[in-house]
Image (cartoon, rainbow, N blue to C red; front, side):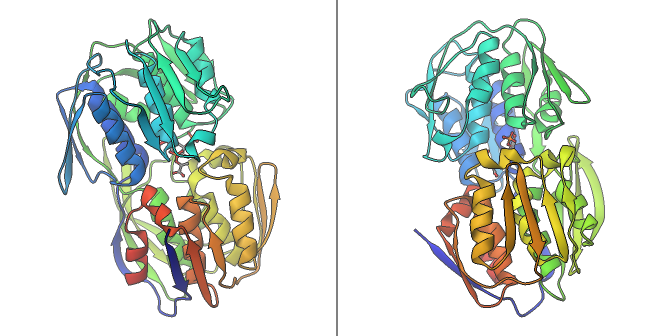
Amino acid sequence: MKTTQISKRTSPLRGEITIPGDKSISHRSIMFGALAKGTTEITNFLKGADCLSTIDCFRKLGVQVEESSDTILVHGKGLHGLLPPSDILDTGNSGTTTRLISGILAGQNFTSILSGDDSLNSRPMGRIMEPLRMMSAHITSIRDNNCAPLRIEPGQLCGIHYHSKVASAQVKSAILLAGLYAEGKTSVTEPVLSRNHTELMLKSFGARIESSGTTASVSPCEELYGQKIIVPGDISSAAYFIAAGLLVPGSELLIQNVGINPTRAGILKVCRDMGGDITYLNEKTAGGEPTADLLVRYSHLRGTVIEGSLIPTLIDEIPIIAVLAAFAEGTTIIRDAAELKVKETNRIDTVTENLRAMGGSITPTEDGMIIEGTGALHGSVINSHLDHRIAMAFAIAALASEGETQILDSQCVDVSYPGFFHILLKK
Ligand SMILES: O=C(O)C1=C[C@@H](OP(=O)(O)O)[C@@H](O)[C@H](O)C1
Ligand SMILES: C=C(OP(=O)(O)O)C(=O)O
């Protein structure tokens, strides 16, 4: 397993950088393309391990996916054309693959088994099993612990109106995708709006889908139709370079073509609230997804409060926000973020462990953390616990910290950002 060593950066980060494609949109482009009639052409697809797991699963379901250096072609099978898999569907480290594909598989006339790595197989699946069962799906946890491996058997689905306890785009999407196969209308109401890529993209593929506030509804349709998709740069990946630009003295970095969908862009609001100097340039919209180039300049940061409806818009960015908070002046409070406990690791614990190792002052809470900014950290050994977001967040902390830092199991960044260290260390 790989260890990456990072020392304090003595020169500013300057120039331009492009960010790999959005992970959420890349997963969905394969899934919806597979269920559509005709070919879906995807540009700027994220070839991270999670999205490659999605491709692998759909290949096992009989879908032809052609990969070239700059495009992916998905030869769709139509809504009812998937084939029984010859093997277990391996969803790797990916919660998104597992939960979204479960909604699709619940509506098929064959049995499938889904399983992932140790992290994935310990994450909660009851949150999708409950609503899918209410729709009459036959989905069971093979070890009877509400986790994967999951067995999904054929079922005749019926529409429901589900009130979700968690604001989770994966739960919402699993239900809406099952709704494509259900009799009648299927609706999901969330406590607060989560990322809405499924709603935007399914609409462009021709689904009968509507959204109003925190409720999204789908009704069955004859077919979906293949699309051309240009995947925007992933704001969750851009977050590390935004933070690097804000933290390394003298930096001025132009981060190009970043997705700034308001259901995803909470980190930009937080950085600005903390005093971060970020300018949006060249704003555009394609396929309902807004993008911009972000000009980020080194800034003096102050603490802030992050809570409520903002949390789902930046849930994956909380580890790097915690790093920013450690360098800021004053206190940062993060609450309403209990979902952090059920990601690739318990991110309240893994952020606390690693921030303390670097000399940060952090108090974990039941649903978040309180960080007293000390303005400085020191190098240390970082245990990523194989969580890509932890490895990348603390790599950025290392750039602005005295001494040397070693990131253990740094290869895990390949889950969402292959080449991350190469780009970071040559910039
Ligand atoms: O739908 C998606 O693409 C995702 C939703 C979020 O998970 P939850 O739905 O569990 O909040 C996020 O953490 C994950 O990285 C991607
Ligand atoms: C939580 C994440 O992804 P997933 O749920 O798809 O594993 C993530 O990328 O931070």
